[in-house]
Amino acid sequence: MIMTCSGGWVHGNYAEKIRAAAKLGYKAVEPLCWLGEDLRAARQAMDETGCVISCILIQSANREIARLIDNSHGIVHEDAKEAFAAALAETIAAAKVLGCKKIVFTSGNERFDVSRAAQHHNIIAAIQNALPLLEDTGITIVLEPLNALADHKGYYLTTSRECAEVIRAVNHSQVKMLFDVYHQQITEGNLMNNITAYAAEIGHYHLGDVPGRNEPGTGEINYKNVLRAIKATGYDNFVVLECGCTGSVEEVSPRMFALLEE
Image (cartoon, rainbow, N blue to C red; front, side):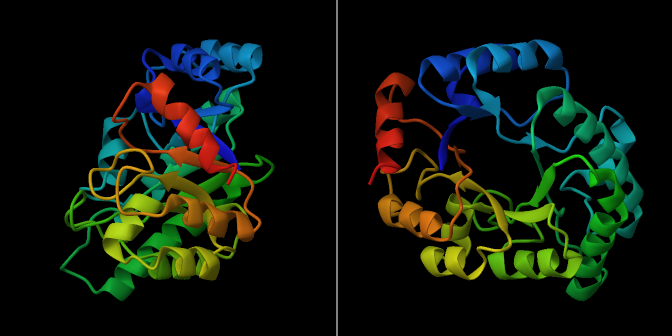
């Protein structure tokens, strides 16, 4: 597995974050938001340092498209289907410049004018409509459940079970789940069993402790055991520190690397 620096732990533009993360010993960093960045300068920094961008967020420079895919609306709405494809096309173009192989997206907030079954269907339909864009790219898109109890009130897709059902329905090797350990601990707990049960559907991991959403080791989650469970599934890709940092990055980072050595 590849311990990945949070984009928030290092400062500056993409290129500066890449170089700073590399100096700390990271092989990857995840800043997520790419709009407005000099992507070619970032790619040059990646080529020079060997530190890569692990994943970027689906975004669009078009305000109306961005509005339709925002969580205040999202792909739980049938009218966001084409906007999702358009935003994905823009994001794939950015990912190609960066050599990035993962794009994260979300469902949008829950609606109360239609059933959950209808919203579930709309999510699947939006993904399936965009599948041709992934052909010959080597890029995987990852759908993220979020917790609606503390951080994302009103969000539709909260459980790993329901996200896995979406992934299975789409049934495409380049569509997976982003399992955020912080969010799923708050929503449902049972982390190790869910990691094992949904291993085939999971394509990316975010790490953060509960409470506080700071680095592993600051809260209630036994990250040594969680990371062992992830490793036991055969996953050998990015595990991303999507969290705050309670000390200096120089002090905290060696402890994060050590978690993968247990």
